[in-house]
Length: 412
Ligand code: SF4
Image (cartoon, rainbow, N blue to C red; front, side, top):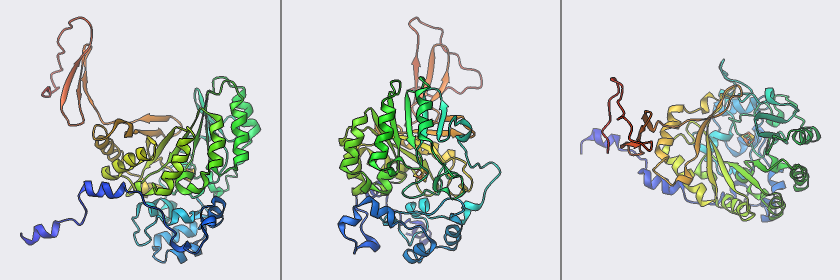
């Protein structure tokens, strides 16, 4: 073997071996907290109380912090606060600045670099809020923001103007006004509770809200958007699940970006929710050097099914101010969708969407499978690139005649 060839051999395991490794379930471990009693470690209040929230704590736990991260963390409290639960911190590989968990949660100085087209409210939520904390952008459903707090803060958060209150947004939901608006709008049949993270509310407070919403006759469907099962699986107690199951139909959307986030603890927490009859979906954000890789995303969606969660959306990362270093390209998103559709179970294939900047709502983005259309037929391709013709119409129709500049692909 010549030396040139030898030097190009990659240390990367083959994709199948890598995917199998990514799909293994492991516990997060105790890391620095090995002396903590089980009763404390498994208590969600203990986890919240012991979050890493300061530069001093972070430097002590991660002496390998890079200059860009050090500077980013110094500035975080003016943009989006730093907070990481001890449980989730244990998923970080501190020695690897490109660790996919690390990149999602440790601030970087690039967060202060903003481009002219970036926005603090890319989904135009504030301009679609008839009362504080209630966004009515689609005809039959509303977004009900219940808190500005999360268990940990994601550095690409589309609501970073609001969550953690680092920018002084001073979010104060007015539950009475929000509920009154929904009661007075019979077209609202679907309410999505979000924030911040609704599962940070106490069981009692959350139940009070759910009960009021369930009492509104035209509200057919309730949803909760949460990253708590991933950041803080200890919160998914049997008591919480027993309370939630009283308010069916209630769906829950979790937010997972990388298969390493799906630990044995998370699988158990999601299992408790599923056992309570709660349909579970997952929303991922496409992030550079986190999950912009077909092998990673395929492992994630397959692992989600093993956790009884239907992959629901992959979001193109919103143009939130200071997120350029985390945004992957749309071309990469399309490549990932191409690598999922047909290559794995249909249930595992989420919809890839761009939230149209400025408040246009979610727009599905897909690789092109329709090659041409005529009145009586469509020419399509499958996941292998093979081309087929589907003829429509009950009566024989004139043969489709492509335009002169259309090269007719070989039909199988
Ligand atoms: S959990 Fe959701 S709302 Fe909270 S910081 Fe992460 S993306 Fe934002």
